Length: 200
Image 1 (cartoon, rainbow, N blue to C red):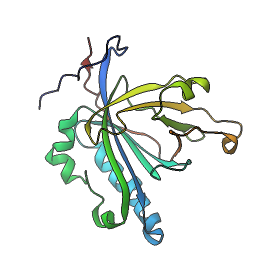
Image 2 (cartoon, rainbow, N blue to C red):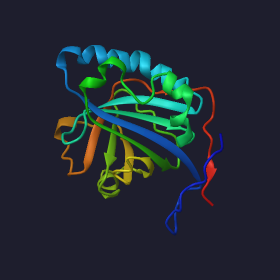
Image 3 (cartoon, rainbow, N blue to C red):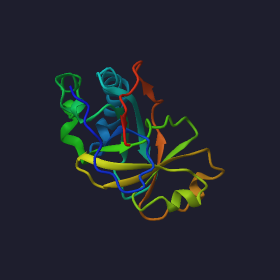
């Protein structure tokens, strides 16, 4: 497997290296089997995926904001070829087994970024913006930039930050395009280091 070169980047691009974050978003339409599906995803599917060569971190989240899919998974991977591998498919990648019929609002994207997906701990929250970095900067956060290069490629740009335990999560006023997520699992990590590509 060859490591692809980074896509053409804008002038003044700040990243010294390129790492890939694979995002999977969906909702689940059957309340009766939703708890069982979540157990399958968190306890079986995620550990299987982190064992795939080229996967380095995996973590699941549940959206606390509206107008977005309910569930989000973030995976740090080496490159797009990982998602095309036989091992990925054998270990359940790209489908939800017998629960597939209940999956709705399903979106997958592969993003270039400058570091591995953050490990969001219990009591912390993940914020994703599709409307630029300013809402996150206004909150005193330092967002990471994500640029979509494969799969749906929508939204093309995202900004991501971890929000430490706020005094009142219910009191947060989130502008349109900014979504808040709580971790459902701890971040799983493989023993191998991710492949990196220089952007220079």
